[in-house]
Image (tube, rainbow, N blue to C red; front, side, top):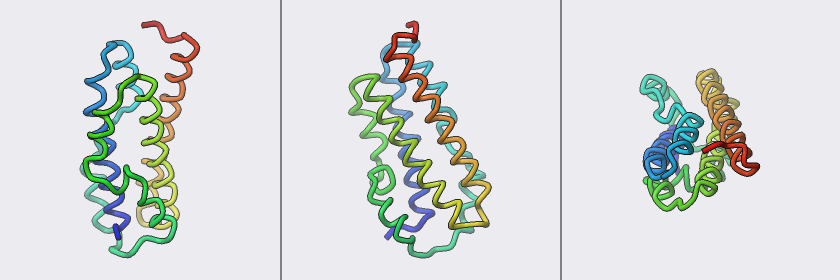
Amino acid sequence: MQTARDLIFTYMKNREEFYCVLLPRVPHEAQRARLTEAVQPISPDEGELASLKDLPEEDPDDFLAGLSLNDALKKPAFGSTWGRTTISIEEALLRSQSIEKTGAVLFEHLAGLYPSSVSLFLQWLQERKAVLVELLRFDDELRYHRFSP
């Protein structure tokens, strides 16, 4: 069973790999720029990740155990595979939204479990929510032809 720290590291690595593989594959330059802008920052801050060493090595609660069944949290290299197999900008947006929602749920739950790291988890939660809002705006612009290529 993965610990909370394992879930965080797997999620962050998969998220980073997903965008690093996906973004260069978006053929339309303006769409790629808009998507890149929406998902920043892609890489987690190393100092923040280092602060997770203080998280206890305990079995996750039932919610985290269930959440760990999400591919973005359990499969190494899932992000690069998902980025490589994305075939359209619409699919890229759906997958991006999914990865951000997974992070938001994870960090919201962790903020309640670990008071010692609550500020970091709330910061990451806010980042995931902000990225999700930008992705939804971009999706709306594409659907209703407000995005000018």
